[in-house]
Length: 236
Image (cartoon, rainbow, N blue to C red; front, side, top):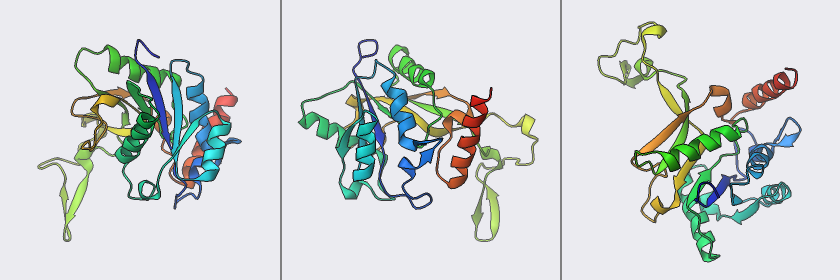
């Protein structure tokens, strides 16, 4: 429990992955990828329960080995086009059937192994202590591409996404732009119902974290870069 709020961490980890087969349990610095997230949250006594939502028996076994409980989700919620909000709804409904309710859910993707406990605490602090009525908080990092420099094509004609934008401005003159990095989502479970389409809500708060802590492990090169990061940290 954190400041009177009962907390559950939900880690979504389906078995299918085309770019990197079995990505969620691929070894990263001698540990399955999902273990980095599970070990981190198990070190936080304020988190009342840690649950992995998966469709895969191997991921289930590994998750339990690293101290998580497991909710097996149906195949229709585990495809490439499945929505995260449906995984959240399924987990909440399963827990309700078990007579378990929680005030706040942390949605922690295993593909962000470099997040820190401080990042999670910062999200919880902003969610609970703010005076702006936030019902959710997410982590952001500086955008890879400033939207002023983004284009779309109308046939063979490139056009800027932002009307009348000057994409040739020097970087120093561009306004700071940020993007969701998917590392941490924290939200009150009371905002989730059958009609909910997103768990950020209409009035989200945001925490900015460095790019490396918000890395999303999606391709083989991401694993290589993360390995280098860990090696560098060990040699500091």
